[in-house]
Image (tube, rainbow, N blue to C red; front, side):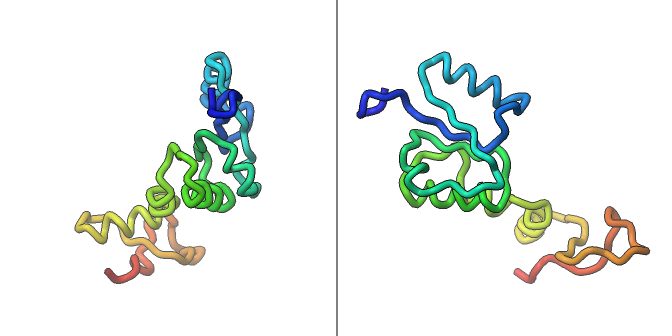
Length: 130
């Protein structure tokens, strides 16, 4: 129970019918928690975040990443680190981070390749300089 005597609230950004997290949510409910699923594409008000005992970002969309950052700033415990999610939210940023610490990675670009270039074999552009 929370200090108010109510069951702890857990917020998860994913659809109610997610194949894994619907089961996780049901098991948490069986153990006395209140679980709310949030649309990962919708904003979550700060007062809503403040009522959570835990915030889980399953689907990283711009709105859910902003909610994760807001939750951390409000002191709400989070399953995912906002810094880690922001750093790894896209494959491009992951490639750039790996390149920045010395891993050999394929050439990457922020821009789409032209129509004659295969997206998987693009050689245009590079990660930003270190």
